[in-house]
Length: 92
Length: 92
DNA sequence: CATACATATCGACAAATGTAAATGTATAGA
DNA sequence: TCTATACATTTACATTTGTCGATATGTATG
Image 1 (tube, each protein chain N blue to C red):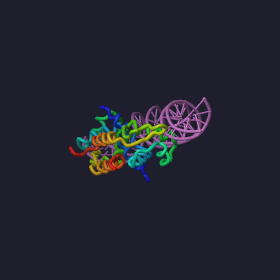
Image 2 (image 1 turned 90 degrees about the vertical axis):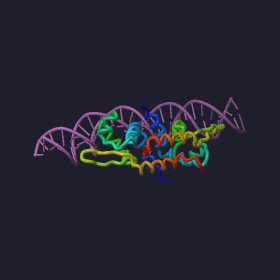
Image 3 (image 1 turned 45 degrees about the vertical axis):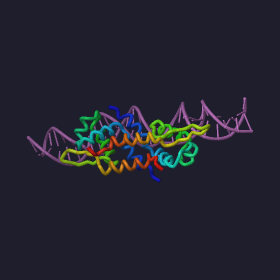
Image 4 (image 1 turned 180 degrees about the vertical axis):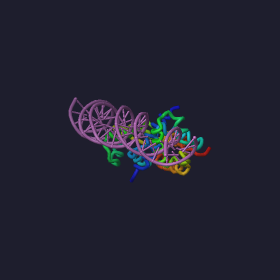
């Protein structure tokens, strides 16, 4: 069967900068320009990371004028947790 | 702070073959030669994957004669779950 | 419309990763 | 001790990934 899609989602979290972004988004919704100030990376690199996080479903976005606001997706996060749990269960 | 180590552990799970291995180990402890028959990969590649899974703490190993027996580490798996939860919490 | 600003996309590149063949190491059995 | 077996390590290589500079797109404002 296809573990490829799950692997892709897990990879979305498997980077230190994206982990930092997830921690930052726990506080509240944040726009890209704010995240850019927190993380020592270029604007294009941040955009790349946000795309991966959004594609994985972990992060939601909301466009407001020139700004992109990013926030944790409660639905995506719950689905992610259940997906992970499916691989690391020990109770059989 | 250091998200690098957590990223490394998450990467240990972020591969389709390693996901297949985790699912297989849910059934019971298995030796390398058995896993090798289940997964369409070479022996050296399996050895490489098992090293990453063991280093991450998710998998335990037990050597018995010529055979290596691998099993899910209940402790490692629980630590992993809590680590992940730390990054995907939405309840604040 | 012209300009400034926020973000996305493209192109290039170095580093990391997954893979397998060849080789090394340890163990069991004849 | 010789051989076969199980697994790890080394080496090499192609692919993927993270990164940034340059450029493109879209939006607000003068």
